[in-house]
Amino acid sequence: MFNPKRVNEICSSFSAKKILVYGDIILDRYVFGQVERISPEAPVPVVRVSSEELRLGGAGNVVANIDHLGAGGLLLGVVGDDAFAAEILKIKKTGNLLIQDPQNQTISKTRIISQRQQIVRVDREEKIILNPALLEQLGARVNSAQIDAIIVSDYGKGTVNAEVMAMLKEKAATGGIPLIVDPKPPHFAFYRDVTAITPNLKEAEAMFGRAIDSDDDAVLALQHIRRKYRTQFTLITRGGNGISAAAKGGKIFHLPAFSHEVFDVTGAGDTVVAVFTLALVSGASLREAVALANAAASIVVEKIGTSQVSPEELRTRIAYIQKRH
Image (tube, rainbow, N blue to C red; front, side, top):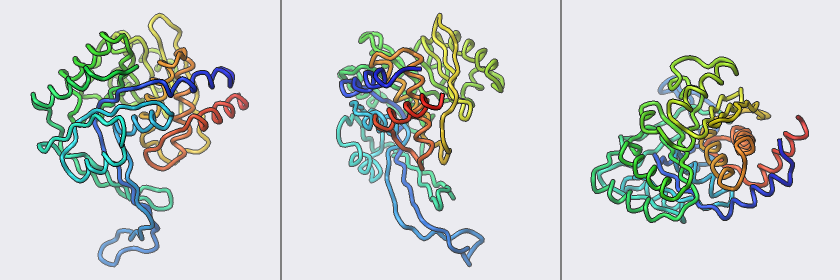
């Protein structure tokens, strides 16, 4: 794959990069506790709470990954003017381009976890509505941003639409910077002509129109998606089967998954798109960028909930993978 010196070269460039992350922003609340009995009121477990955590989710988790890797993540999106938005502002203290709008509600997800297992999830969400005034504010923030790349983190909650995608494509074209999209099925038509698209297996199957059950299927899917959406790069994250990738005019390749033990796949796609983008703008080749993203994903799925990876963890995991393969 590549030697430790090359990994250090790429990772040491992260700190000089600024990445704009636009998309659906979610406040993730984790309630940890122990289940010791069943409620006498109904046949449900009683959780004795031991701790609670608030984390950035959705596009927020992408930017958290970028920040954790030592780069500058600029978070852009629309949230409500409410208590959940206030918590997001506390977590993301720098690089915050959020627009607070009283007509919208901040999306939140509460997960109750016991013995490393999620018992229930409670979602508070309404579709984000982008009116002309919000579109104008978003355009102004996009145009003024000094950045090395743009990531669109689309969770299908309303923040991504045709008008915003047109703004982001224009910014990328004018600045000569990559535009990478982590997609959602309702919006596939918006992604044509972006630099790269990173669907997971289910999303890729929806884009391909059939099941992807093998490496051969993945090759056909990559060819179809790259041609249809006219991307320079296409990645399919395939869970336990690793990542398959293709470049315009290049050879398609597959990298196996490297996880020791999978506890929670929540946010793994966020880590992939963050590391892949940072590596690309730091001089990595496609294969190097995918290898780093794959290694990073193998780390976060061993953690509970939306999590990030540090440069040191990445170096250590790459060294481990090199030794084993």
